Length: 102
Image (cartoon, rainbow, N blue to C red):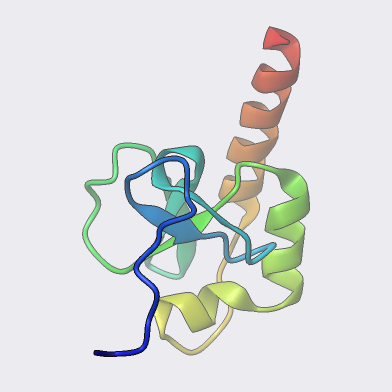
């Protein structure tokens, strides 16, 4: 026996990932996958781009926290800074679309 409890308190099943910004766990389909392409953080909406991915809530607050904490180089396991301007524009568009829909 490993000593672990085998009860699952999660109401939903499926893959979970951790947001690199706020460090909260969420369902994979609620997060935006980000990949590094030539020194730039690129959103991967379909989840098919090659390479190591990092997950982020599609919210400007989480993006700001990730940039401030230098989470992208750590998540991608590479040295140096990443350009997040295109990612910021995409997240802002997604946030605006979500707020307009509600």
